[in-house]
Image 1 (cartoon, one colour):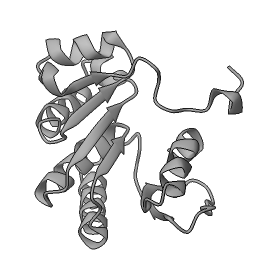
Image 2 (cartoon, helix red, strand yellow):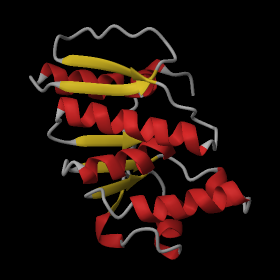
Image 3 (spheres, rainbow, N blue to C red):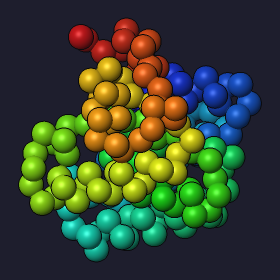
Length: 167
């Protein structure tokens, strides 16, 4: 999140908004602005351990309850699922950003089936769900994971500064 969306984060902070980043402890990050607060969190990003996922959910819930943000943007599968549920329980509006559907929809493993059911449940709660391509938008509608009236296709990308990355 920090690496790819730093310009978006800084634009909010420079506009005087208080930005709270809850992200994995995978690198040292020192925000440039006093309006940015970074809260590292443990998450097993690729794992399917229900005990670790419950712990992650409880940590997110505790952070959201303590910080009381006005709005939450979730990125990636676990924050989209567990963060959307936590924000709903705390009555904090949110948006889920789905950059790609990945193995959850290409695999028929038991883990993928569970993840699809969790997604279907959790995607009821965000005000908006953002996707980056028409294929993902159509698949989410076809699989009845979300109604089209809350689904937004970002045609111009998600705010990644392409001049920073060699593509």
